[in-house]
Figure 1 (cartoon, helix red, strand yellow):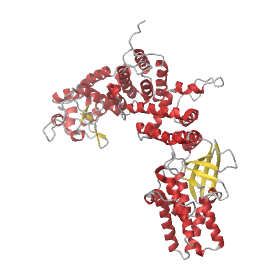
Figure 2 (cartoon, one colour):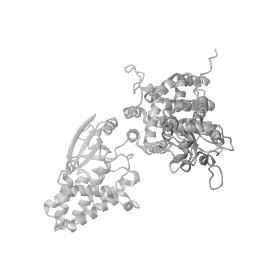
Figure 3 (cartoon, one colour):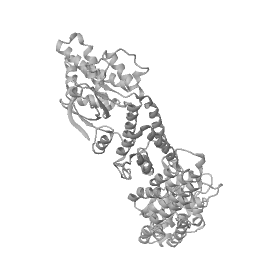
Figure 4 (cartoon, helix red, strand yellow):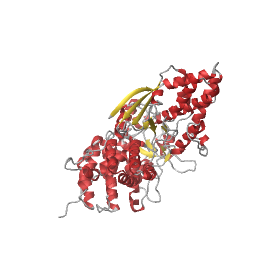
Length: 611
């Protein structure tokens, strides 16, 4: 719920009579603004008329006693708010250094400026309280101590090299530069103070982290809004701070390790938190069921991007510590699927999990997360998990080529499989997964039709995966080649069109494919070039390109080793022994390869039940 939205001048946000402090939680981002942002905010204020709009801040206001100091938790806009307070500090220093020439009214104005930085009721009660990461709070307090605005304290080591002090020094220099070119330096400083005081910020107060996230979804805020994961972390650590403040650093450590398992990609982090709830929905909802709320899933039937923060807010309120430990443990298992973690007991899964990732089978990670976490309870051996991971890879090859079932149904599909396998054990878990995936997968007939058509145009990712699988099928330990090696963010081995796909067909290919008829050759590009029979995998695609068939077939590298179609891949056996290439050969090779693909990616029926 939004409690208030108001457009305030900075002077009112820093009102000397108001007992309001802006606290930036210890788990927020450290102060990161640099010269570009400092320069922008200074120039914007100086060059525009009073009332210039500087953006917005979002605060959580959970204060209930109006007589207390109102502590607002700043969850968006902290960089801007900290910067403005440092600008005020630099203006205060500029006035204080000229105190001897100030008249009585100007001295009162300087004192009032000090009260914008520190509450009137206490010398050490900061108006803006930066978070503690990278010594932000200690550095900020040292700045104010240098001004005499708070009790004396020593600046932390190397404070001058960090952003808080550098921002303050930057504003000091800009103020003096402006004053020095003015006919009346003092007037220029007071005019700057007036402009900063009149500049406006929209302050939005909300009641909870969930309300804040709803705002982030719709508000195009200046700066970098927090993500749902940031807000879950904030809520988690805020709850820990409220219930056991001595454990906040420990929880922060656990959270950091949790994210280290997931990596820096926000989409992966957000997907994990959805998968965690959707995989363990029954367990997570159990404490919330009651006589008053008889719903099976009081927290919600499925976690989505929209309701994620609301779900986790309720979980954290129920037991922050237990939830964090459960999430961290799940993240460690999830890291196996991301190839970010290793488990010697499950090393058999390394290849199938990597294949599942390559075929874009991430939606099934919620099922695997459940099975790995419940491995003992479900009496699953590593071999069972291996079978399911390989099954999922086969399923996604078929699904991603045929779009059956549609993407929107995948989460529900894997959640239903979890419900079905929960009471089962061992082989029966595997059988249930096969049965359900087979029931919703495209038929062999539909899959075959897609394979026989212009597969390259249908789905390049599936095409490459299938070609690599066909090539790997014929490899031995001695002839193994890493077809997934990446160099400069590109695969070294890429899809090669034997009959080139470009519209400008080279003359030698027109002669070979169409008896010299350019129109026929162009028609064959449409009908045959993108079929699997005209495709292979090559580590020298750019070197082959539009070359003639014989040049592609017989190409050698600088060491005299074959890098064309005689490169040793079983996938290229027919190509290496062919003297020419034709539409008929594309059709024949398509039929052979499609047969092999249907066999490789079949979803077999489950074993018959033995009563």
